[in-house]
Length: 241
Image (cartoon, one colour):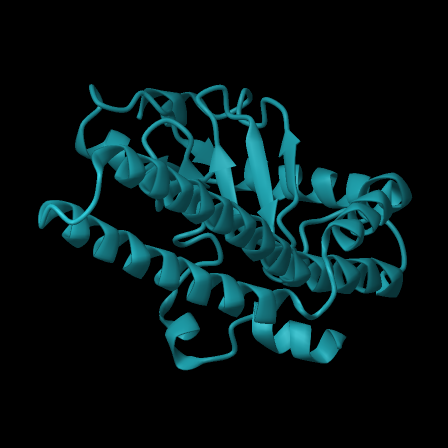
């Protein structure tokens, strides 16, 4: 239910409270993969700003050319993204939920995976025995090649099936998250004018910023939504960092 979702997503445990700022550990550099760190510029001035800068760029400007991005730009980008999601949930979330549901099989998937694991183990054992027999000279090489090839094909097929089933099981979590996101949207009373910290916490797992300052919000249900060129109006000082 939504209450369980709130507790789960908001990470209501001690470790979460060690994060000092909302975006700490959540902003990822699209160039080098490092996280961004928080800084203040023009401290004490009327136009004091908070910016986020790639840790990799701070440590070595030659290895990563990512420029800093203002926090208010991130706020605006999330608000725009949320409003689009709120307005277009019928064309974004509903088809996503339908597609995910169609891909997920019934509950027997877990049992099938356990059975495939057993088959993989058995085939691997047969293969080892076959190799031992061949090494001791008890088998004709042509027969060995035929038997080994057959076992290899069976092993590949079992692993392929297991991979497909595992992907389906992972999607069940995405289905639950998508249903909860639809419910969360249904609770809202309209578009947002200002950044809503609680909504961000409940919907966005992380943010990926590209070199062009395209801002991609990676939501908890696996959906990725991008706001284009969010940082082009960043302050001059931020661009020099």
